[in-house]
Image (cartoon, rainbow, N blue to C red; front, top):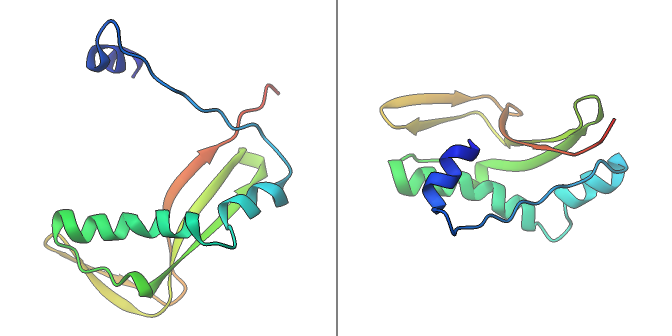
Length: 114
């Protein structure tokens, strides 16, 4: 991966890498489930991009963002939860979602030196 980055950026390119430390689960979950809904908008944008870029027909109001801290894995796991039974076209496939069904969309690993 680092080799590919170097080839893409060239010899005088640079990269900014952020590292988030392992913290209290409540603090991390509050950040990823923020009251203003900023993170939820970011997550739901995944569906908007699929609609725009490959012609899917996700109803953004049909899903809600949910993030949970998996302490044993040291990561936030982000899901989009179907708000109702629904069928979505993704490319040439129909995908059925049950009410309450979770779609895994992100892992955000937290650094610890343990």
